[in-house]
Image 1 (cartoon, rainbow, N blue to C red):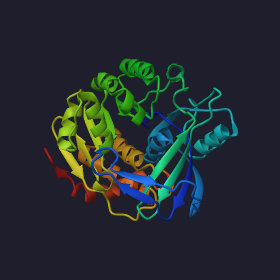
Image 2 (tube, rainbow, N blue to C red):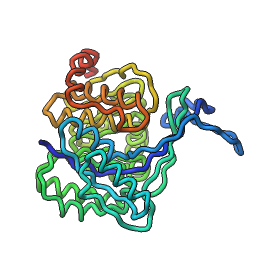
Image 3 (cartoon, rainbow, N blue to C red):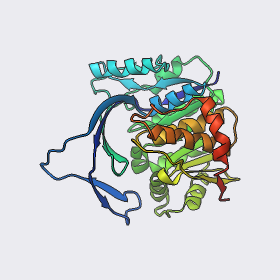
Image 4 (cartoon, helix red, strand yellow):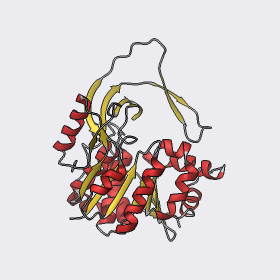
Length: 336
């Protein structure tokens, strides 16, 4: 069985569903084209409320496990009741939590997710921490198994020192790295991200993140996927993946650039769509499939995830992904 280390966030996700919110279109802002608004002082009644465990490390790990890949969650919780609740939920998902850490006074990470049911999108309010106080060096020193892939997501302040430790670890063991940079990294440390890209096998970003990352690196950017992927590949990574919501997803190498349209489904909640895509895509790569097959696994997994409330509820087992791949490979177009 292949194994993946999932370094990233673990969160207590609180979902609040609203029938409709005020949507403000801002098309001239390339990275914030739509805003969600509320009246000051208003009392708003929600349609639904529920709690689920989430975060990038949990979401990626859950998808991998369903595909027969053994995930190890590298993250942190507090010693509070919230931390206990998160650990219990991770255990229920059968994810390996041997390397989870409980430390510090900072509360575990919690996300309050406001979903607009009419417009099928959301805004996330996040508090607490699950990555900054996680001791990556300590966890990697304890790790005695053979890993086939290291996923790194949701990093915040101090990430550069952690990433140096990760690159040293994978260099000694010849393990590929997948990087899914956080909005914090893209906004504050774009130039530092570039310095590490030559050691990255797969860079995962959504379209807005790709635009912002390229703009922060070079001072300018164009909302064109060919341009964006070429710019990012030029920094040294082997594969670039750009997800684009209802427009599907793209993957590029120095040889090819492919696009797959989104699968049409009844959307319930889009939280975790990117992680669901990533887990399908990466599971396919670990099964030694090509980029087109991996795109198909990613888009099918993502579509099923958004049809449920909760980032891991709709994730598919390997057999279902394999059954769907031939149909969706046919929809892929080659752009280069």
